[in-house]
Image (cartoon, rainbow, N blue to C red; front, side, top):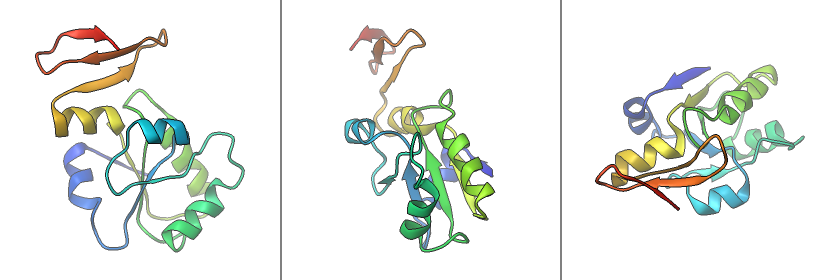
Length: 129
């Protein structure tokens, strides 16, 4: 599995034949997603690999997974699942939705380890969401 930085991700996500997949829940995907990405929830989904294969067109197609943030392990765990099923071109965008939002809008959102949702304004001040 290749880990992608923001710059690597932005350069490769629109390459022909590349599929970008958000592995979080449908509810989380509806709240925020990277344009052009597809939602295939990983957790508690016994058909994850089969669905990815159908969506991408094969186990040898470039596939980039992402989740909420660098602290979220869902995309890396999902990538390991795909690799054990024979997928050969799996990458993970490590920064996830949090970094994408920060880089493209200048703001960040996320969930703290206590489960409290917070947001950071463009001025850098943290506020309760």
